[in-house]
Length: 398
Image (tube, rainbow, N blue to C red; front, side, top):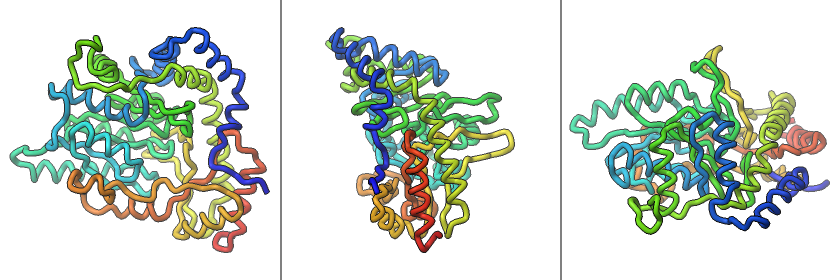
């Protein structure tokens, strides 16, 4: 049988080849490679799509987080960076960039465990840390300034509860939307909200494997805050409106014109592709339900009024026999991935530079048990059937 990859980018290119080739040819014609017209057009298109005042293209999803944090340090503290006494709460079950961006912005990450059903940060545990922190830090030697929830695997966090906590404690919220472009949270606001439009800022990644991915690195910051937007634009261009006379410690973190052109060509397919991912997930959910100890992804419902539009950047299952299942599927020619094998609080880079709140039973168990199956938007029914049949034929699950 033909091997099944996690993602077939060549198949996607062939599907939208005419659009992409035309977009690249336009760049070849105008030769405006740095902040060319496609960058502004992409920013405007995504701003309208998400429903925010500002979107700013940047060089990667990691830099999107760093630039948003740096802008908030300048806005809120009047300083170039946060300092080690400034704490920012986030999840340990995410890619290292989330925690690393906090360090690079000068602050201290506070890791709080996840909800085992959604794999997203648990608002109950956020509140518990804040309650304990307010009692212990009587001299205000340290203080929590913000929260970075990660919409992991394309699944929205419980933003009603997180935003409620943030308002109560006067904290900023930066949404890490690297894996959830096009995802929707339908909470108490009264109408569905695109992820990246709920907090003070959102940080997106356009890494090639993302739901909206380029032909290299790229990212974007979204915000409704005029000052944050202006600061991000200044910081990404060396720290000044005039690059020869700068005000801040900046970066060379622009989104390439060529990447913007590719993303514009692919953007017209994002809703179609997200819906295709959801259809594949429905098939997985129906035919893998009740097999052995397999735990399938769930769509989070905080109440009858709250729902999410999961965009399935990854379709992630859990099993105590994860390693055995991965080897078994590999032998069948089926690629799988573990996102993520190590929680952030156990990485050397965060030793002595982070705060660990209580135990991380859920995060550590997820690291041992999660396995992501192929969910390529153009994946054929035959391929999906082959993956499901292989799992069902494994003696542990059939």
